[in-house]
Amino acid sequence: MFSPARNDRISTTQKNRGIALLVMLGIILIAFTASIIGRLSINSIEQKNNTKTVAALVQARDAIMGFALTQTSNPQPPGTLPCPDTDGDGMSNTAPVGGCVSLQGLVPFVTLGLAVTVGGIITPPQPPLWYVIPIGYGGNAVAAFIPRNSSRTSALLLNGQPMAFIVIAPGKPLGGQNPITTPLSPAINFIEPPNGVNPYTNYNDLADATHNDKLLGMPVGTFWTTVEGRVLAEVRDLLNTYNTNCHIYPWAVPYAPSVSNNSVVNTFEGRVPLGVALPSGWGTACPAPYVASNAATALPLWLTPHWGNMLYYKICPPNLQSPPAPAIANCLDLNGDGVFNDARVIVMAPGIALGATVPSQIPRVPGTIKNYFEGTNNVSGDNNFTQLRPLNHTATFNDLIFIVP
Image (cartoon, rainbow, N blue to C red; front, side, top):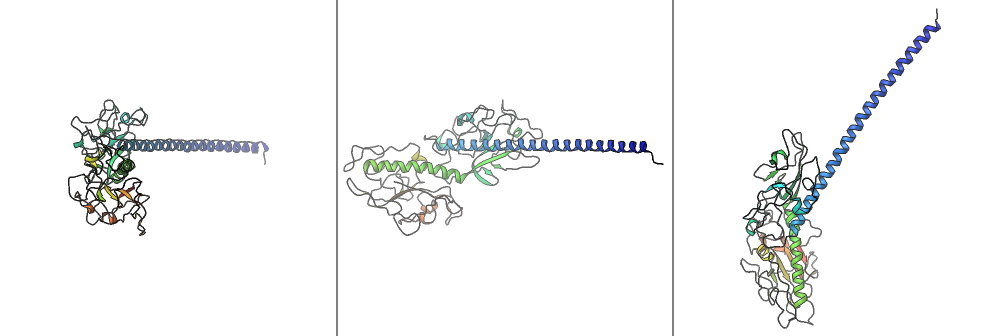
């Protein structure tokens, strides 16, 4: 027999079960949502930290490059890198006899003028940035530097590629790492092996369960091309001032095996005269019939010992002229179109030595043009030159040409 009261009890029970199920579903949804939000928050934090780390690496790289470009002394010419900080005080640590105390240490943020925070750039809880250079690229004595006239090789490798320097941002401590900066604990407490292990030559940008450091390197070719651009700009300005004051360009040095850096009269191509310039010496009054009241600009002391064999120089004849003689006509073709009107004077630098050219530029032989320049740039006596803009350096070409106004 049908009972309304019993039916009401069943209906109530079912409603209660439905409500309980909805509550449980709500709890599950809340937990799931919280988990997703938590993961998104963690990912967001990690993404922000990664962004900050990359920005810090770039900032350090640019500051180190800026340091190298602004050195202007004979012990520290352009291309000299700051030494790593080996004691955590933010200062570049040079050795008493030249060179660096160590090829690896912290980024010297005080020397570089970077923000004075923990490690120079990255704030807690992240550890400071580390920094490594090749032998011969930093220090405070001429003998400690890699000669600017050499092949400019680098034994420092990142993923197998030669580097001028590497900046390293250690990740969170792994395993038994205990990073302490005061006093500076061993590199292994910051950087996972094989990175940071003496000899400081082979580095890899690994990312796995046992490696979380981030590395940013400056390729050696890019480094020297940038330094050469800074040097060529100064040489260009020196030659231009010489001509402005004396109404003549100095004669070139014959491009031949020789220790001389002195001008030879009626020499229109060769090396830049970084010794005795003719007809007017560097820093001396222009002789008659030139503007005797003016003087040719003096050479920087760092230029001759480090760049003597490197810089090629070409002048369109005739060079000898006195006011009001007409200006030298353009005679150089820089784009291969056969029209020789692109420039009247150029200076050229060869970049790093290339092994893929014919013949190989390794080792370099001073005064042998094919051991320094490529293609049309290594042919003596013609007016054809290759100037790539923008730079498109390859394994077979890396010359850099500046036009002298």
